[in-house]
Length: 317
Image 1 (cartoon, rainbow, N blue to C red):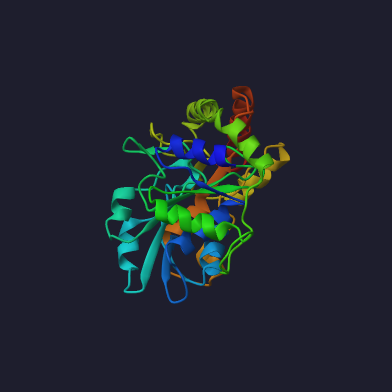
Image 2 (cartoon, helix red, strand yellow):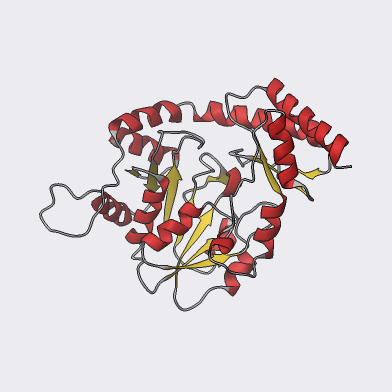
């Protein structure tokens, strides 16, 4: 575990991280390390995995949802400014689908920022690797992530005091003074797998980039908006935007033995019965995630594209 923490820290130009049992656990530790608790407001995008919302509630804080850019799914800095209050404590900036959030604008309000890099390991923003902009960054190594430990996560920071606090909270055994702590440890078996995968990260990212290029070539003439093709992003998901028929396309692809999905199961404002998130709503109604992972071949991607072409031709024109 210590070796894995050191290697991931060095990749980001940061001290050794704090490995945890999951990305959600790492995010919970990050919030607690920043002193977040009852009465505090944590700002987070509505269009994100519900794990982020769970971590905020685990810390006892109040979530304040922020709208997103409907094309990228990333946090909208303009809407962020409108939702700041005197109780605002921390901002969680999620680098969604491997596309870096606009960090300079998110940092502008001056609040501590937690970067959620679960889907963006290896991505850069203006020449600097994501994870090094905010006070804390969290990574996830779930089975579907860019590298995996089966289950697992890690907290990174440039601040030794925050790392020490997270490391203290991570486990409760053999402590002289009592405080409420957690059993959030990563196992050595998980870390060994993580180290082997981390050594292949560059290869994995390159293969994903090649597959994204195949998608761009074969889908360019179809009625879709393709994801932004930026040199510093990574392709955790390949998410296209369609004007309508998202669920019909998912079902049609399933019938042709192609697994696809809405990349976010349900935006968080649905769970909290809130209104006023047109960007997140538009993203949820238009985004379609297509298969992309290192073991997929360009030939298989071309078959997926042909399946989409056939569906559009037969049903949606």
